Every structure is written in C-alpha cells, then in structure tokens.
Length: 332
Ligand code: NDP
Ligand code: MG
Ligand code: MG
Image 1 (tube, protein in one colour):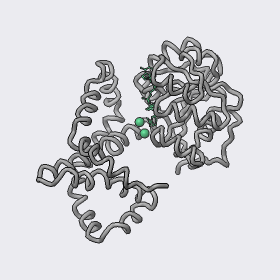
Image 2 (tube, helix red, strand yellow):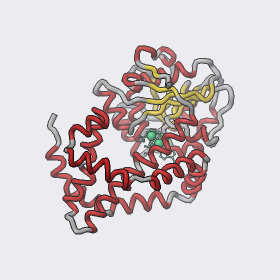
Image 3 (cartoon, helix red, strand yellow):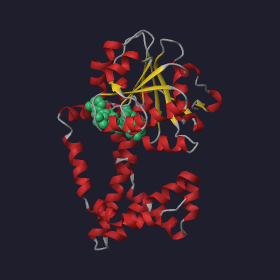
Image 4 (cartoon, helix red, strand yellow):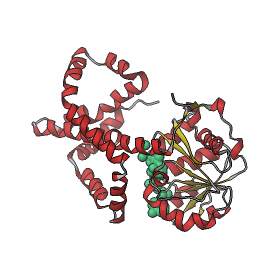
C-alpha cells in the first residue's frame, strides 16, 4: 500500500531561506515559480534566452537570470525545461557549478531513469511530479486546492532528501491533496505509459476515430463534434467527481446497456494486447531510445503531428463551435 503524505505530515522548514533556481518558465516552470514564491520560498527563474518566457517571468514580477547565473547562486536547482533539453542544460550550465550539498530536482524522472543525467554523489537528487498540467497546478493552488503529486528520492546525500521533496510538494499545493511516495522508475514508466495509451494518445485517437466515423457516414461534423469530443469533458468530470458509478447513475439506462455491451467490443482483447505492447516498449527503454533519436533529428514526427492536427476537420469544427461552447459555460 502506497505511503501518502498530506499537509499535516509536512513542513516547509527544510527549504526556508534556501535559494531555489527554477530552470524554465513554461507549463510547469511558471506554476512552480509562482506557487513556491507565494508559499514564501526564495525563487529565482533561470532561462537560456530572452524571449516569451523571459517576458512572462518579468510580467509576473520575477527578475529572470541566465541559467548559469541562477545556478551559481542556488542551493536547489529545479529542472523545468523540456525533458529532451535537460541533458544539454545540465552538462553546460549546471554541472560546472555543482557544489557539495546542492539539490537537483525533477518534475519527471526521464533523464535520471534513462541515465541521460548522472549527477555526482555529493548532491541530493529527488523528484516532485505533479499529476496534472502546469496551468492546473497554478489554478488549483490559487483557489486553495492542489494537484496531487508523486515524490521520489534517487540520491540522498544529506539524509534529508525526502523531507525536502515533501517541502516542495507542500509549497506547490500538492500535499493539500496528497503526495504519494514512489521511485524514479515507477514514476517515469507509468507517466509515459499513461500519456501514450490514455491521457494524450489513447483518448485523442478514440475521439478522432469516433468523430471521423460519424462524418464518413454522412452525419454533420458539428453534431459529431458535440457528441464525440465536446461531451467527453462532462462525462470525465462526472467520473472525476463521483467515480464510475456516479457517471453511470447520471446517464440513461439505454446508454448504460449500450456502453457495457459495445464498449467491450471496441476496446477488446486486441486493444489490450496493444496497450501491453506499448507499456512493454516503455519499460524496455525502447520508447526512450526512439524519442531521443527523433529529437536528435529535429522532431519531424512531432511537428507533423501538430500540423496535421491543426488542419484536421475536428479541430476546424471545434474552432467554428468555440463561440457556442464559450457562451454555454457556467458564469461563476
Ligand atoms: P515546457 O515545454 O512548457 O518548457 C518550456 C520552457 O523551457 C520555456 O521556458 C522555454 O523557454 C524553455 N525551453 C524550451 N526549449 C529549451 C531548450 N532547448 N533549452 C532550454 N530551455 C528551453 O516544459 P513542461 O513544463 O511541459 O515540462 C517541464 C518538465 O515538467 C518536464 O520534465 C516534464 O516532463 C515535466 N512535467 C510536465 C507536465 C506538464 O503539464 N507539461 C506535467 C508533469 C511533469 P523559451 O520560452 O525561451 O522557449
Ligand atoms: Mg504526466
Ligand atoms: Mg509526462
């Protein structure tokens, strides 16, 4: 059974007065810098270049520094640049300035688990991984809540690494919900498997496949969009609030009967076999190898995916319906 920490079990003390460098000011970087600062910790934002992030950090009241300048001064260095960029930033801008007793912190275990970054033994290496997108980590915190997090220690030089991980989890708002203890291996593999098979890959492709089937059969794209894409949020919100039983109680008996019988035909043993194959590919390290190779070639597949989705009929239809969707949203 998992060890779960909440606000009562945690304190900010291990990080009070320490200089924390947040590297990157994107999805997670901005949320972390703002939440940690609002929790009373000392945060400096470190960036590679002037540009969008730099301007945003300034607009939010930070005085961003070049990565190496933020790192030189720091007691705690948090990696919130993209996973594939971390190795180079580490090698060129962090490693040369590592001091005895520094902390190296991650929001996802990829670079440590797959040994792209191998810190020396005289530092603590730990992780606080939010189980939600950056903007939600910020929004929940501002509204008094918090997104659950996973915490893990890879290297415990000081003997206090877990206490510090929990202090960050608390400052992020994570322990208002709960912080689950895990390992770099478990976090890295489950995060990749989850985003590929369900959160990003699976759900997106199932929605697309359903939408495209309806359109191919001659139904109007607008009707197909509301049915197969827009309404999913309401169903997922019901599961989020009340579990599967809560969702089932809110839909018709016709929907329940059709769902129980047809769902298993669409997501069948063949689909489960594919899920297992995808998960094994993560576990074996083959996926990491492939992604590193793709990144090395300038991420052509990733870019094509973004371009194709931007031009797709579902995305175009969604944009056309945006006004209606916005108008219907609850007003408070
Ligand atoms: P983003 O893609 O949002 O990070 C963008 C930031 O990194 C910007 O400040 C950008 O600066 C900078 N950046 C971009 N490219 C480079 C580069 N080549 N070298 C240095 N800096 C660069 O990252 P995420 O927030 O998505 O991810 C950060 C970490 O958090 C990752 O480890 C990820 O796995 C983890 N994570 C992310 C989640 C999410 O919701 N996104 C959820 C949980 C964990 P500029 O504006 O100048 O380009
Ligand atoms: Mg994730
Ligand atoms: Mg991820």
